[in-house]
Amino acid sequence: MGMALGASKGQRRRGRARTAAISDINVTPMVDVMLVLLIVFMVAAPLMTMGVKIDLPQSMAGAMPIQSKPITVTVTPDGAISIDGTPVTLETLVPAVAALAIEGSDERIYVRGDATAAYGAIMAVMGTLSAAGHSQIGLITESRQDQ
Image 1: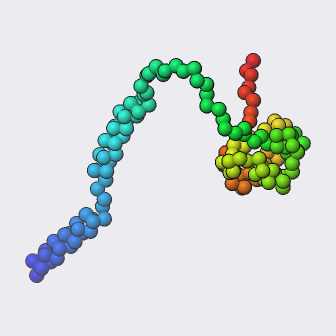
Image 2: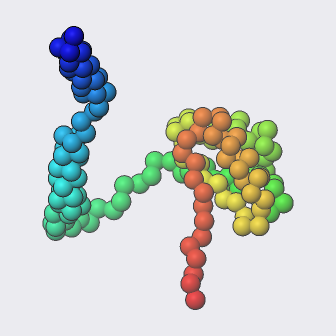
Image 3: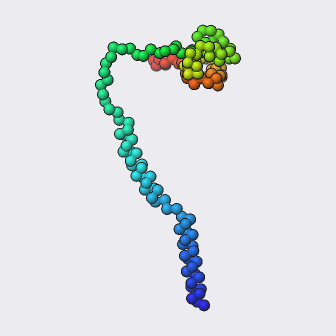
């Protein structure tokens, strides 16, 4: 009877050991791999940022001319909208820009918003143009003169 009791204890231990081995995940190899990758990237990062110094050839040729003049949309302090000096409303903005856009929705559009103009008026102009499919929208600012 004692032997049967001892055998059942041994079987229970083996059963627990198997369950414990299956439920535990060994993360040591993963940590080792991550540390090696960290060291590799720490060594390689400064090498990727360095450039090769060269002397570029000199040329008398000017810069390539821009094929089309960008469309300039102006928002005044009181919220009035104009395209290249021609007054428009928010509803007629998209058709007016489409009439001037040579390249379609790839046309460059510059938005000139007065510094005292309402933020919402400028965002409404940009949102309307963006919703019409124009992706080349930029804001024109003046560079600050530090004194």
